[in-house]
Image (cartoon, rainbow, N blue to C red):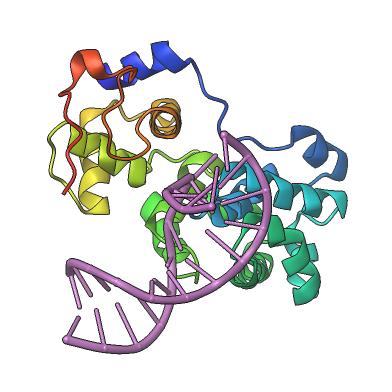
Length: 221
DNA sequence: AGCCAGGACTGAG
DNA sequence: CTCAGTCATGGC
């Protein structure tokens, strides 16, 4: 919680997860679907590139499950190209869209269930792993699940915590934070922001905002 | 010019 | 189960 406050005061509130409110109002589409697709597209990929892919879909007015589900693979691949891994991502996005349209044409029904039931279902879909599933639950579904990523692991290492496994880390954060969707969202975003700006790789960064409350060594190996 | 990003899957040992 | 290899574009 100290770390959370420190990061929050240093970076300020983050605007996660970005999505196009105007577009969804205009087309009467569900903004949550954009978040879910974004979560898949951003796997090991810079968000700037994801934005371009999403923009391509919006320009074609096709950012909704039923449109994607029946789009040609080639065409979809073209739209997704900027976000990298475009062939497999096209497959995954399409497969996911089909799944949604066939089972949950209304996303309310998808999200109106116990968290871990949804999570289990998401994890059963090809291309959705732990982090992506939890991002969808937290940012699209507003469910209290803490999202762990590579930056989170580095951060913990730096504080001398040798927790390696995803689930253990997630539980650790959830145990030590108030069970608040807002804080979970914000904290994860802040950790990413920290990682992008100050803890790129090994070298210890002189300007890291956490230096005052954390060990100065950046452990590696 | 490299390095790497808001990972997940697969196959091998 | 752990681990390397694979997928690929664009930003910095």
